[in-house]
Length: 450
Image (cartoon, rainbow, N blue to C red; front, side):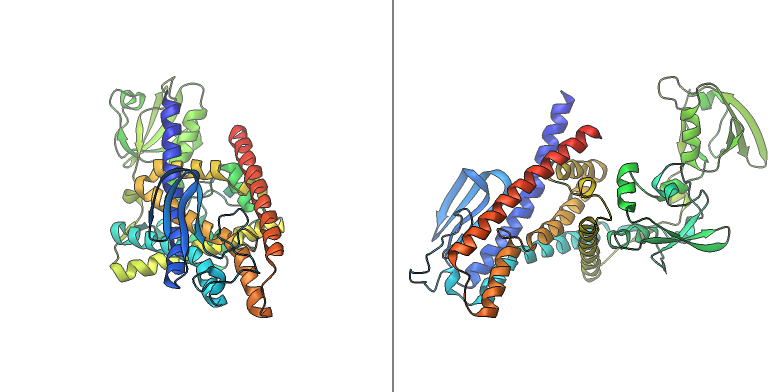
């Protein structure tokens, strides 16, 4: 029964995010059309069958049962599936029709959905910065990290104890700057590392993003937490052995440890009792204990990041928040563009990195589970930028395809024939349906395989 509740929550969260994105996108087209006095016949969020609708003036407002899209039906706009109110070339073009307005106005109407999605992302990031601020970890306060054998970090040459100080030839001030979308998707990604007092450069392979996908992550300040005990659970194996708050475990079964993740791995990999050496003030104390047979845990708690590192809590006024929102949106935009470029160049696997509705729903649920409303709005802003980019691809049936026809008309001073436009848009629509099915099928295979 739990799986059904979890599945239902995933679907509802996914629909909520898509509803917001589609509404804002179509609202852009709608308001631009209305501003230029074009007659809008229908404003629909979702595709048929219709759940709810009403008419006001010339426009019918509709909520459809299929939540994966929407459309604005503008008089005189030729469309691939009859969602426009197209008129034939031989019919008289009326001033309130799409084709009756200047090309530049039609270009604005076509791009308004994309522009609104971009604005939405900026506003979401701005709102989060204004309301919550952000926590940043100075790289100087993270002296070294634990690198697990076989991890993505290990595969590119990082070693336990390395201090990350820069990315792509530039030193950074904060840890989060090392992992920004635009930095991680650059063509020649490299990291600057302080290793035993020497600054060296670690180059990554072209398929580094594929490696991260397979191994499930890269580096995190959590990997730098020391093997120091913040708390001992009552009546646990550690409590019975005499361990105390503030003890630092320095070896397990004769193997030295310095990091919390390293300590946890040693404990979980052990099949028998543990021989621990604990540093307490100036003393080294030997302890023997046996982990809980069910959980493979000994009952100790790690220190919080704020107890170890100099975490800076930043707050912003409205103007500063807008700058942060614009910067995050720009960084995400270039990260996605560069990531798409890597897929088309063959540097990374399209199968591993291109996600459809199943992947999006899963990621949205994970973001919400880990970050609550902050996670939800973060992923919604990311998807809003993704939707804007995808819609501007020059594929007939997308906004970018319509823009391409208008650019041709603006340059040549004549429209492509309705038959040519209709034919290309239908081909584009068929292509998108096929791509949608393929990506969804790929999502399902990855889910089953993963």
